[in-house]
Structures are given as C-alpha cells and as structure tokens.
Length: 396
Image (cartoon, rainbow, N blue to C red; front, top):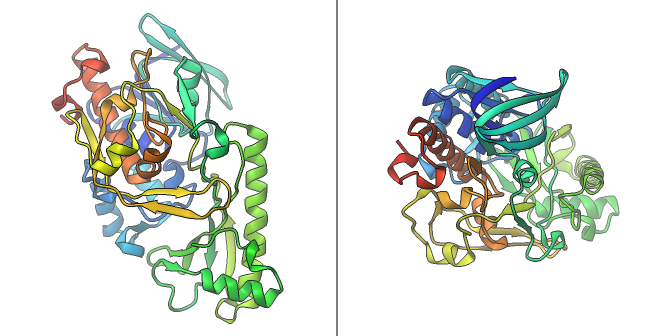
C-alpha cells in the first residue's frame, strides 16, 4: 500500500491547483482524475473565459503568462484560452512539482484511520487503496466528503432548485465578425424562424459564441437542461442526451438557415457536462448572500470573489445576475464540520445557494485549491491541525 502526504481527488481548476501548491512545498502528492487530462471544466468542459482571473495567485499568473507566451491567450475580455495548451501547461506544472498523476481513475471509497485516510480508487489496475495524512476533495460534487461522513446541502431545499446544466460544444469556420465573444440570440432567432422551428425552443436567451484565441474555432454556450438531478446517475445521463439533442438542432438550424453560418462545422461536444450546482458541504463557516452583497472580509482569506451572483434558473426562467461587492472566501468554509485532516475545494465548499452562484467560477476555484494545498502542506510540516492554521500559513 503506497503512502502519500496528500491525496487530491479531482484534477479540475481547484484540484490541480491544490496538488501543484502542495507539491511545491515538498509534499508527496497523488492526484487522481477520471478523465485523461487535467483542467476539468477549463479543458474537458470547454469553459471560457477564465472568470475572476484577477485572483493574482502564483498558479493563475503562471498559467496566463505561459498561455500568452505561446499565443494561446486572448479572445473575449482578453481572458480566453486554448484548451489543449491549458492541459499541457497544467500537466507540466504537476510533473515539475513531483505530483503523481493517475488518469482514467475514479474514487471509490474513503476510510478514516489513526494516521489520516485510506482512499480506494478504481482504474485499469482494479481497486487500489492508498494512505494519506490529508485528503482534499476537488470532485465538484463533494463525492469524497460525502463518503467520509460530511454533512451537506443542495439547492435551497432540494435538487429541484439547482441551476440549469449546460453542455458546451466546439465549432469551426467561424464567420468574420465573431473574433471575440459575441452574444448571438438574434442569430439563433433568425435561424430557427427560417427553419420553421418555434423560437421558444431556443434553449437559452443569452447564448454566446466564444472564440478560441488564434484559431478558427469557438465554443458555444447555449444548451440548458432544466430539472435534472445532479446527484443521480440516470438523471445526469439524460441531461447529456438532452444537451446533445439541443446541440444538433441548434447547429443544424444555424448552418442551414442562417446565411452567415453556411460554412460552420460542428467539431464535438464537451467531454464533461457543465453542472453548475450540486452538493455544498456544511463547513466551519457558511458563506452567505449577505457576505456577497456586503463585501465581507475575513482574517482567514484564501482569495476573493469578484464575479456576479450568476444564477441560471432551474426552471427555464432565464439568467439572473446580481452585482456583488468583492468578498473574501474564508478557509473555514473548506473544512467540513466533524472531519479532521480533510478539505473541500471548488464550488462545493460551505456556502448558501445564492452565494455559491458567485464563487463557482473557475478563477475562484483555482485560488481555493492553491491556498488549500499550501495550508495542507503547512499542517503536515508543522504537525498541526488544519483548524489551527494561521492566516500567514495559508499563503506562505
């Protein structure tokens, strides 16, 4: 049985940042990822731009510098990127930080022991157990935290209030005039009307074509799947099926019934379903809508959220953006009540339904991971509880 200081479950923006941060402090880190690349929604979910890039963390700043230097940064508000290069740079940073990677690997189980945790994963080798002193859940759905016994909430009262899901898709041969992110609802209205399809069938009233820098490709934010349960495998499967149906109908209408898009090519749908909301742990502190509206500051600040409270209605009621005051994300919200040597990062940290709609964006998630990896490493190096980590030790 192999021993690690830290095991990170999930290689999305929060998980990969946590692994790199901990690895750079000399920790022996294992990062498990169910896809065959890093980046999560950044890469396999086709999510651009990198919202809240202003976090000014070492990892985000390095990624932006690398992407700029290679000609793969720009587009809408100067913050979009090439997915394959993002995968490459994340992988390179993990390797340079001596992080052990396991792709095509799924989390199975976790058991507490006197030295930390025993984590069981499944891949081509079968079920394998690893030991760690601290476990970090970066799955996006608090899957590991749930198995470890953490309390959690969903929606306001249940999953039916969870935000709509989206399946992004990649297209080629973007016409002139679409060099940056462009709101394109009117173009879809024209295409649907010309195709004889009721415009009410357009899945989302604020669709965007998001150009990938220095390519003729773009990703499209359009599909919206309402009422699906993010914690039910059959429901998530049906959400993907519905999303792909929406993609084919929308693409066919745009290509065949709008003169500007006659050369448009459909490349692929994203490998990851865009789930905006699922579990939120009950942590040592719950971030609230009042924190977002009032710009709350905390001594145990890990980063701060700049983004609006961006709610994509659960029932087809549209998108509702509420301005916020920049607020701090406290480290206590990463610590599940009742669990030791365990952290949660990403959108499933402890916060209420509305506040989560602000800090769920990828820049915030990366900043959470960066700080969590550093804090976990300091807890191990200084032989102290995660709850006793000082504000200085979160960032040094």
